[in-house]
Image (cartoon, rainbow over all chains, first blue to last red; front, top):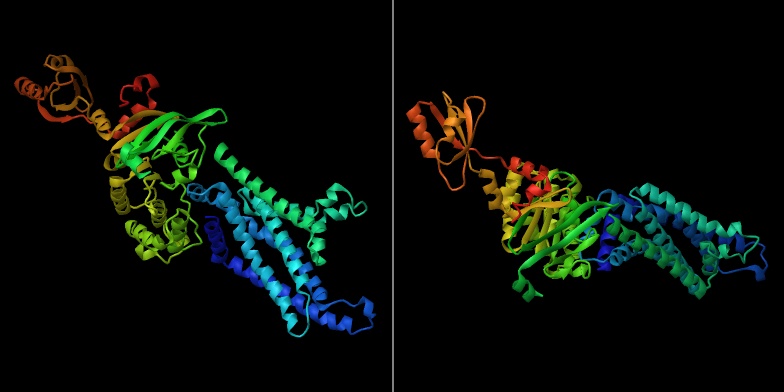
Length: 248
Length: 322
């Protein structure tokens, strides 16, 4: 049942040009960065760099592409998540889901899964693109795996937050702006506490936890952070929809 | 479960449904039952609580008190099982306009747990019943209002539910479509139960065999359509005289209990239950040369009955409740 809701969401993304355009634009951006990364690698590494300071092509190119990806998702996710619930609220289609034999959890998880599945296309695409380097060089697949997982968790967290803000309002644009502001604040939180990295608030920063993945490290503490972050907002969304049913 | 349905035959049980909106009672203490094969018409002025009641029946809104049972399954305790037995078309059609008719109905069938091998057939049947077969590949967005309404109805009957709940199903349709939809509702009503709300009173007379009138959140009438029709005819005659007699003259005729003079030489005569003074009145008119030119039963329109029921104070209305 969750899959059926997710299928409906995916279908609705691709029913309008919006889904295709976002995919195309992002793939173009990632492709350009990938190309630039490869070019830069030759320029930099062929230059006067001491052997001790040299590092692999995977990391060099991957760093630019994944850096861009995490930044672009900050804009892309609110744009895609805004319509998930608020659009249904506005066009009054929510009763269609509410009167179907589905629990609220299934509806929310289905919508979440639909969005994450769409964004996963991009994650897989990036991983495949970087893997092509393997044709003429030996690359570090572990690094790609860690980054893909990190990006996936980051996107899942973004989507859950976006879904929650989408459930708060019946105006998709308001939902997009709110989730963008919230995500942006969470991203740069660690900058505010740069002088005091042990501060509790600094630990809440999304970027802080993404850093270890970006370095190729899968840290269970960070995985747990993203899983909890995602679960929190999904539960809040379910509660918000339940309040609709109770309060009317 | 099937055995239970056959045994009780009750498809919908609403038990003392109450819904508060910030302390104000939008629906208060509404109870009724519906059995298989009944079509229930839900009437009431704007804001009377029709839609709120329907939302509670379909599990879109939690009742503040009371409970709903669909074929014996409690909506609050087992919402998924109960909802699987209901097809619902809300007042605002819940259509995803970016899909084609086929795509939308397939999604509806899938979400309503139609087995995947039966989905194609279910979609075809629903389209056929609602006259949508030639619109399969059209985007819902581009359909006319009436066709969108048909898609809404198709969505509600696609999983062949035990109870179909339609909130104002004939809004926005042309007269021919309305006739088709009424036939369809009657057809569904033969083996399932239908609840429909409407503002159009003749429609209720044509389609429903059970009527409920709700006003200010309270059920003011609940009974068969024949009870309502009987109310409507009443023991009244409308008589036209060229030289009208005084009301007192008419009162002398056996059975006449009341007489009043109206404009245009018309008179309204009320007679006691179980008497037929029609013939005596005609005879008297001939004998006394009153110049009788018209005599007809004075039918209160359904609108009048409706107005009477909804604007009388509660005490006086107790009687018609069957």
